[in-house]
Image (cartoon, rainbow, N blue to C red):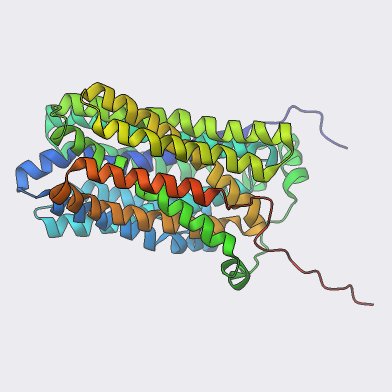
Length: 428
């Protein structure tokens, strides 16, 4: 007999723990951006040297995306996510012990290895908990959490640097990560049936929507996936996004310090403004796309229209921001640009579900790898562009990538799966 008890909401606690993990990933990676001027002052690093330090994280993060996802599949999200958070938290703290450019490059590379597993494993951790009707909202709120973490970090880091020096933020944020890892390991379970707090009513809802599979694994059909041109369009589009957003994550505080003459406190405050606008973009993009889908029933249109508009807003606003005479007007235009850029994120990840189906994790890992290769490129290229051509040129390159992203998204068709299984005829 079906239970009449009210379903528990353990899956929602799992979701909010995952949101917290997304926040911590971005908090830990943005610390060094805000601390960069102080680090340069102490060690005498040039802008190009800082670019290579940023590059060490980004290239490591890109290279270990797919291994990180494999780790989640092989060992389960509970153990795998705990392990990678402990790993990257350790190297967050160890960054404070760096004594040279070379040692900092090594610390940031090892830090990136750990963070690379975060999003693939976290996505895997939700796959057996969230109902299909809740997944769009779940993706929006997790990515909004990431941007919120990035938005609040510059203010917190600036305060800690003023009070205690640039090393303290790395130690403080490392401790936060370790605390989260302990909470995750104690609370999370790989399957709802293993969780003591899930009642029969909630379990019934989850299993009615997702089935009862717990152990079956299938090989990823890499030949079919990689042989489909859509995955390369998707990856090229996300390359454009990755180049653009990492410019803000890695270089924007430095820009405010060098080009706009903001002091440390002002830099911490105003570096947060575009990222806060990005939080709104993350939430709005998925909401608009889902709403358009419900009204039109046209999946291709619902994904294309929102992402195209977002990239176009960013492409137009960045040049206005870079050439504005008033520093506060510039920040306002940059906020509009990041809002537009982030309108595309939830939609991009939704497309990996639309076209990837059962293999959406692998599809998203490929897409995210290309996005982070672009992030590694901008980490270095922006440093050289600033030295040889100035900040305005560097931001005009960002604008060009945004326009390319808009054009590429016009060719993506979210209604066409990358892989359709051919069923074998039943045996007599």
